[in-house]
Amino acid sequence: MHHGPRVARAFGAALFGIDAVRVEVQAARARGMPRAVVIGRAESEVREGRDRLKVALQASGLWHRQGEHAVILNLAPANVRKTGTGLDLPMCLAVAALERPVLQRRLFDLMAYAEVGLDGRLRAAAGTLSAAITARQEGFEAFLVPPEAAREAAEVDGLRVLAVADLAAAAAVLRGDETALASWPPRKETTPLPRALDLADVKGQQVARRALEVAAAGGHNILMIGPPGSGKTLLARRLPTILPAMTREEALEVTRIHSAAGLVAPGGGLLGRRVFRAPHHSISPAGMIGGGAPPRPGEVSLAMHGVLFLDELPEFPRAVLETLRQPLEDAEVTICRAIGRARFPARFLLAAAMNPCPCGWHGSALRPCRCTPGMIERYRGRISGPLLDRIDLHVTVPAVSAADLARAAPGEGSGAVRARVIAARAVEERRNGSFGVTWNAHLETRHLAEACPLTPAARRGLDAAMERLGLSARAHDRILKVARTIADLAGEETIDVPHVGEAVSYRTLDRPVFPDD
Image (cartoon, rainbow, N blue to C red; front, side, top):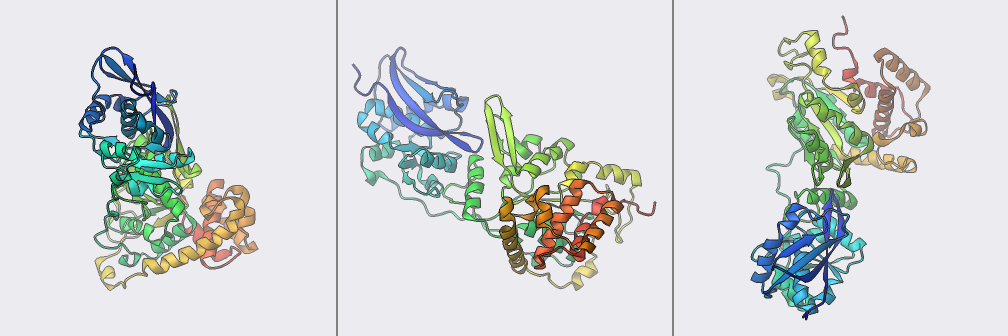
């Protein structure tokens, strides 16, 4: 005779990519050797947790039954692979409800999501924010999590967050004793930088500073070319400081991606600062765009709404660079695996840096270049034409002598530049909204005639530059969109000759290496 329901149920979530799928955990007893069996396309990390969960239940006083009974745990729906440790808690609660039917009523109203230790204590699991979003979409009233995950889950409106420290407290709350709820720990702020980065730190480099402003205002990708020590990395690291603050929707999306990757600090809420990611050139294609089993977000997604900086761009393997073409064009990555299809958003600002030649000193007045024309062509040829076409701004960052640096006055600060960027973006948002995009860099070819009116002189200048440099149709569109941003920064509705001229000047790599040859 059974002392509880034939089948007990609890609800949790399983991650696939950055999305969470509702999982119903069904627990039942079956005669046989005393053991636990997990079925329902559970991955190894879920199956291997069964002995750990048995010890945790016993340590929490929630399971005493002995004898020749097996506990069967079925994870539904059966066609979804279940990964991650967030299913630990609903699995434990479903088993506990076999012994204590009083727990079952409340289990229908909430979703539980946490890792469980051998002593029954709960820990935050990766993907809490995605699971909380799914809980709200599925109509659950409450979301049961460890205290350190409560702030992250509370960012989802319309969902009551219940924080419990261990399995015993979870059972008490399910019985209606809310004195067992744990208080939330103080919010953990993002680790502060040793010193606030500011564009004022950059002396000289007026052309590169201006190019950064244009890139930030229009959402344009930028490539800086210059010798070692010219300040390319210094400039790139300050690009996020001139971008507008993230909206709440952007912060939710960024936090969701980082949470799914297990990169959100316990106790924190939404990520507040724009992300700056700078992977090393030894990164794999999967590390760059995402992959694995189960699929995990790559650097292009971790840089969502922020900056992805690729230093020494030609040193990255060709296979890695070519994977950037889809996310740069579509602002998302789709990973297809036998277990399903995962979609990762990937709208980021690409900032890249490279030397002008293998030795780094081509065109510099400070040191002679040792490279032959063939060496330089091969070095630059490591970056494919299609990839270069997707980078709007190619700007030269010349070396600055120590004497010139000593004489140079501090540059304009990030605050003043950011104010101009915000003003230009407001103009873009009003104009481009009818095209279904926000920033100029995202305008499609069919929008350009209406969004980018040129004076007759500007049209003639653009046509002449196209013929002189032998540019592709995609490069033509990139120049037009950059000129649109430059005009927006100047408060001009129509694109004129100076705007086109400046935009064309940002196509350094379209010019021959040795123009006199």
